[in-house]
Image (cartoon, rainbow, N blue to C red; front, side, top):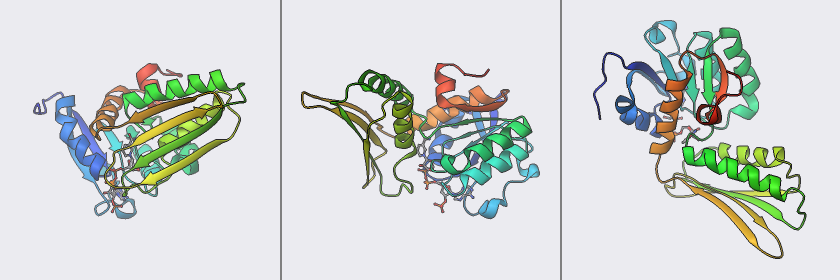
Length: 242
Ligand SMILES: NC(=O)c1ccc[n+]([C@@H]2O[C@H](COP(=O)([O-])OP(=O)(O)OC[C@H]3O[C@@H](n4cnc5c(N)ncnc54)[C@H](OP(=O)(O)O)[C@@H]3O)[C@@H](O)[C@H]2O)c1
């Protein structure tokens, strides 16, 4: 790993579990210097989220838990801290509230349930297949995903997003979704279409957490100096509202 230089961006890690550690491992090589780490102990009930603690922070990356991420994001916005959030399981409940906080503060946020470039392309393929099969009523659809047995939310945030994309693409029939939690698997997502004549399977298999960490760090570089709420798709394929 390259050592941090004077021009390194100062990074706070909010959530210091498996993803937080992986991001720290890669941060130096991507031009970041980790200056603050908040975990379940020094940030219990948000007590680590102070202006003093964040005064030397350029950008934060949030990978905590479904229960804590939303409150952490609101507090980061209130403190004027721009950030990237990879935690899953909070957006359905709190995205509107978090968006309002970011807009009010004039900060920036990139959020995504999946920071893998391969998954972003997989989502585009899922959208295209759903458009092409929307009016082909002989095709039924399913979604399936598997992750390690410590993952707390199911279905995964990525699977929820894939199903939303299919519906937005005009696929209005039933999409049968199932999840498995077992072993150490970093994450596989599958979207399938089946008819009496044939079967189409689209599958993405993550090999490690490294791809998620690199995507989050790429997003952290991109969001600095921007205002508003974006997704990883905006980072990769162009922002909708720059
Ligand atoms: N977007 C992506 O690409 C992507 C990829 C992988 C994972 N994820 C998601 O990212 C999140 C973290 O994943 P992980 O594998 O790193 O899980 P993890 O190892 O369980 O890490 C989460 C860490 O956050 C800690 N935490 C709890 N409360 C906190 C608080 N108030 N402030 C700060 N940290 C707190 C947790 O402590 P406790 O264990 O004691 O609660 C844990 O150490 C999950 O939601 C996961 O689904 C997203």
